[in-house]
Length: 392
Image (tube, rainbow, N blue to C red; front, side, top):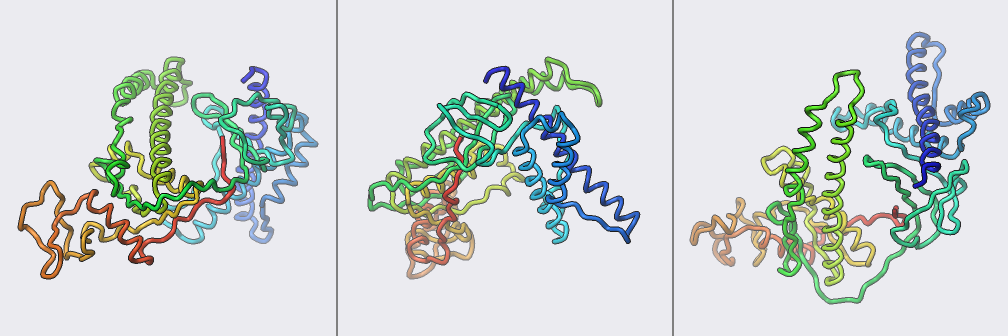
């Protein structure tokens, strides 16, 4: 990106950040006014804030120099955020589940982000023209399948700028293979399937990068500024290098998950996937390894790839999968032993069953497929995302 375009975007962000902070301050002032004067209650919604912005643009020349599209869209985003927070407060949800009220956007902490609707941007000769006379030369990751309805321009922690377009996209069906697969998530191996050729081993990208992260974290700890003091150049550089390592690890996990999902979807017509939610693992001794496995990101990539290529993806509830036999379907009274701890004759289902006594990801993966085909009440189709997706 050219220095001119970068300066224009930062100047636009200063105006948008001022608008956001005014939106945060106005409801607080009205709340204090309503408490002091209950007989003269006033409200402040997106409509009133939009009218105030129009008045402020006519009164403040610096604010009027910027485009009105991202400023108005920022007010809409503020209204949605505040409405969600108020809804959670009225529902008396626990604090850990409540969406917080919109906060101030500080100059050094908040990352620039703008959203332009259809009338605020256009594409011409491979360049992105934004309202306000900003022209960006875009490095396209892929061609847009259709006309974009909106675009979000934002900057990440490394200082790199991205443009995310919202477009209408359709499915790309693949040839039928006549095969189905069951997938079980785990920590030792990220995904264990009914096909040995499609197992996903734990790549341990985070473990490999731990030494470099520790180095930069130590540099930051030594240079940590005191409260109210600006960070030094060395602190900011160490922070940037640490963010760079985190970004690399996240991209490695994402790339591995997408490539694996593509291979699984291309070779199977139907997928029975464990609807596993690994959030609870954050409070266990497996927290670090589970986070490094990126199970949620891999599962999301698999569901999205199934939607893209018109495959049937069934999310199977994980309840009782350690107690059900994958061979005969019988259910034990307690969890089965894992293969590593199994001893001959330790446990049997009972008379008339197959007498299998092991439970492991390799044995639970067939159970996903059995449930998907035998009992449709425990295997529900995945809620695919809408046709409008964001592409970078």
